[in-house]
Image 1 (tube, rainbow, N blue to C red):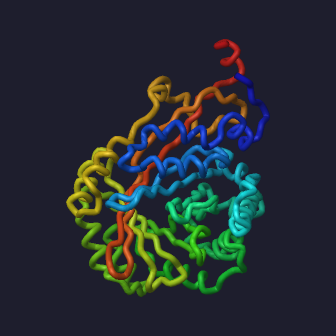
Image 2: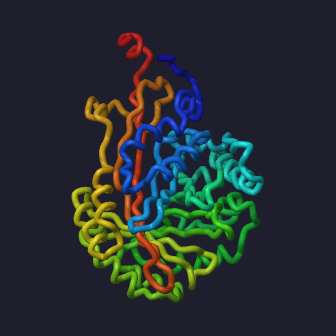
Length: 368
């Protein structure tokens, strides 16, 4: 095994693995009830040119919808992801409009690497979300979600003037800034910004605001911002699910707050509460029994992780070589999607994380 010393993290993460290699580790664990062969082929096609990172996710529909599974990829400040995407070039076959969006993502990541940029000060994680429905699938640019730090409620101007402006390749938008301020002014206690999203994959490139708040505060918040939908319908659906965590994530588009679709992300209080939560979704007819059973097959991890678990790391340390890669799988959250008329659909988000077992040069020499 080659020894990597004084090598930038982005190079070390990419040198022996691409995302396609990592996805190949977890695809056999994704039940056919959640992702059919055509959905898996679309994901495999997408990731062939993407750099490897330490985490990804699958977005699956829980009703009887057609075979569509969307794909998410996480880039972190701590594991070389931001450097990898600051250097990433999309394949030449990508349409010009998508090339421009990928260029905007590169610019964002370059600012993310820049010590003088507020993006570096505030952002730790970025998620890239690829919509992969059968009719629209191309080598499209992803929607981009980034976290903003706990103080963003009080220092939010940089979000619009720099981060979103770079990603959307547009000047700072006063309407978006006013809508953001309107939502932040209506926040209840113990609430804050969770993620901001530039929906580059959507025609109008709306800005998605994701807020973490107590579940009991949903109704009051939506009324304060003037949402025109049936708030009681959201309250009824969410409160009918047992053993939910006290906090949810609420997402809405800032371009038209009054008529926006609303996403509500929920989690169980603990991992052992997943079965009762999924049973409730089946009772609501939001999830088929087959997909409930398939979801419970997903969580797990490589058996190697049970051996000396303290030696596995999210990324190789600066003075270490890459020895072995393992993965963990878990159910991450459930998302209800509403429009002003009521419930549209329910989705599950499945997470896969990758870990490296590393050692120093002396360890490698002694084990050779």
